[in-house]
Length: 159
Image (cartoon, rainbow, N blue to C red):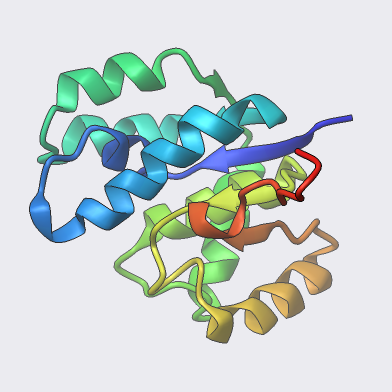
């Protein structure tokens, strides 16, 4: 059985980003997508689509076309309730409800990996224990929150 990956907004947006100051992240994201996406069941959410639609992203139309080909996790009222618990317990800043919603989708849907370049609020070692404690209290699955750099298949001399 393949592992599952949830894409937050940073992943599809970086696939089409042309800014020179994040070129390394863009290159790694493209390398991961080209080499690794076939190894996983890939998911996203309406939150990702909404953030891209509302945001000021370079190549927004290309990003929206790309994301339309990704499986969308079903919405459930529990997502908003869990996201609010994250906000109430300072897992995510109050002003960043979207990050809490991404985490709620991945947790409720038991997605193995939440893939993101958001290292301030999601892929942050200082957040992992707090997320684990809150999700355990809620009886929720705890997804691994990683960057594309952390999710490449191990290569050996044999492959």
